[in-house]
Length: 451
Image (cartoon, rainbow, N blue to C red; front, side):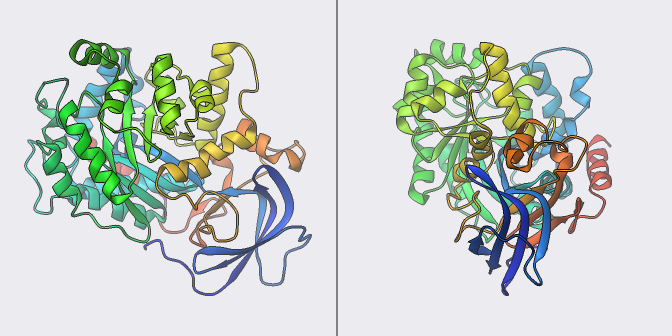
């Protein structure tokens, strides 16, 4: 089933709703054709015929950075020790086994897991384009189309961030694993991407995998393709110190400075991780309005480090959140981890309010995915929202007016009771309405890659 909207007007009565920046009791949302047409506060009891959502309703969460196939690594990569670079070799072994069919099955289950976690839109950083060895499929976008269809089947929105990945390092050809990632040139990448079409539930964006994976002289081609279309542009940036050192050796500057020199930075661009930055890097990113997508659960899982999120935001870089490698899929955990990481680093508390963290998990994440009208409970916005239980063992006790604090600092994905996309229940009472038995679907999809 695809993400479609309902034509008739439907009313949702929300026991409590986060209307940024505060929680309001008794809110009625009127929804027509998949959009919110009215927001009424002070509605003490459900109107006749209204759908009742008990708990705290938030705008739908935005997972701004995902590699769907990494979900197959969960658990496997926790055996033994190592670094990001040893983890990458295990990741490649799973990428080698993907086909359009197996990728669709896995992504469908992963996106269903996201819906169960309150996520209504995902930014899929997609670079597994071709068959092993680099031979294009008969449909050169077969893998991307599998992801777009998987999101539709799971009932969530997707921004397919089709990724240019042309080299294994500065001046180095792709290795054997990376051949299926590469279009050989940015022009060929752009030609293939131009065949992708947007749909009601799907936006097409662009990505530069990293400065090591796209030669400097081809960065402007990718940025230009996105600019001509007004599309979001994402890039892995300074995730590892080794990349910074190699960039200095070849280009005499940092990765951020290299991107600035080639016109990549700007308000439609999001740097993912932005971990190992200089003061000048932070000024360049913030001054250009370039966003920052933090992925705290992956950054700690891979021992990457803690990025300067506070400094970036203070300089003008909007913050969003992603689950990246899907060590867990829980945007509430990502939000609190950003604050708690900063507490550990600085030994002080309260760097962001709960409202600011929810904004990063919702409105600012949707904006980073090319949907600036989403992520708020307001007239005219898409009718995408999620409801968190306030009576679980994690959330019971605090006053309802502290629902934002409870959601960010106590709740988990397990507390999501409902998820609505385009005015239609995708998750109802903790069960996915479109993908039956999501755990079993995940197990089957992962097992198919291990076979």
